[in-house]
Image (cartoon, rainbow, N blue to C red; front, side, top):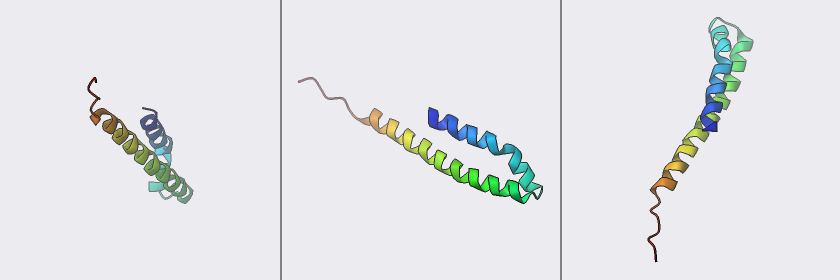
Length: 65
């Protein structure tokens, strides 16, 4: 699932800045906050996609006429 791969990429991308922000680097904190908004949006997309897949699986097939 491409959406999940993108979510993982975003989290991996920001890992170093998280530690820098925890150490007091304000610019790194700004970058972390920006990417965390992207993470939030990507997580929502993963949720939407999972629900979409589930709803298509739950649809009963039409019996032959």
